[in-house]
Image (tube, rainbow, N blue to C red; front, top):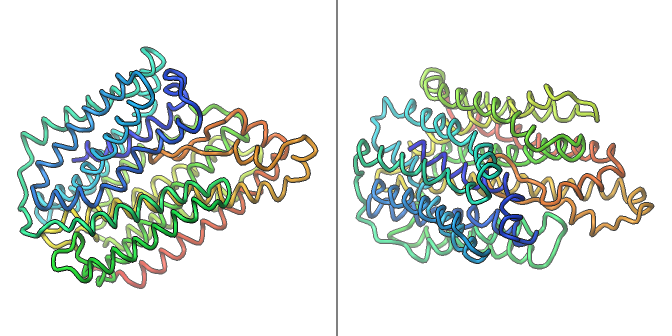
Length: 482
């Protein structure tokens, strides 16, 4: 199951990290490249609840294997794409396949292990996911430079094939739900999440009508989804799970840690690559040991939660993330690489300590016949939160930089529109968004580097409110084990 989780978070990250190589190889323009980089993440978010509900109805093991096979097949199609249109179709198919992986892998882990072994199994699930997904961007880049851009897509078929063999041999089928499919509910959920995430990406470089309309449509669809689920006899998601204060605290913690993780990763990349002019590969190398530490933290989180309680582990993770933001607030133009590594380690290790107890609490709240749907909600909550982090960086950070630097930029003939265009980010995965035009961004930031540092300081303070609120909610709503 951990391999499926690794593919679902590692595949979009691998493409995002190697987007320039793929774009050059296929002759794709900037706007099309950005769309392709985010397409799998968008379709995954839109389809994740449907994947969970279908798994509950037709068998989670069966549809999880369908997801693995689909991810492999569509990745091979992407590798063989002769034109951008075929790559777009392939990435949309990959996203739908990833929805089955991320929506069902955790639910399967929760279902096949007995309660006394469940915490350790969930911890191992996240540990394997972190360990396998961490080197995927670097390996994809190595293959792309050694063989060609098409080799970027070779990793997923190999991992998926291994996952298929292990699942077929060792994983039993789960109980099936007798509920009917709630197609209107699943459609509303898809529209809500897709519209919201797309709308947030639209307003990153400035408020526009399309972005605001999409956000409003997403929120309206979300309200309609809740009304629908409360009134139907066969909901895709039983809203009674939200009566649990523990469940709600876990949801809040999931949103917060994903916002902070998504925002901090793009801030660190912006600082290291754009302000300091270090290579993007260096940032990747700094992340690799930090993520390896996160894998160990995830593995230990389950046993520690059994001994000291899920609340203790979750709060510890949130405190670490808060510490990372405090360190980020101290950055100058000459901050050492070691300090950047420590910041990244605080963030990803803290996130690993949050996500394991979050999953334990949410899955323990799930009725036996709704495991897939609740697992899908966890994934949707995390994806929604993660999309807000880079959006916060772009929407708030760019405007802070523009406000402080308007005079310096205008003297050099740089317009506000050019600045926004230079700082556009591409989304795709859980190692942070990446700048689409890194060279252009460096030229812009060179005009006022101290103002860019000030923007990072302000953003770190804004994001610090999230862990503080989540810690308070966890201490209030999650009662300690007795």
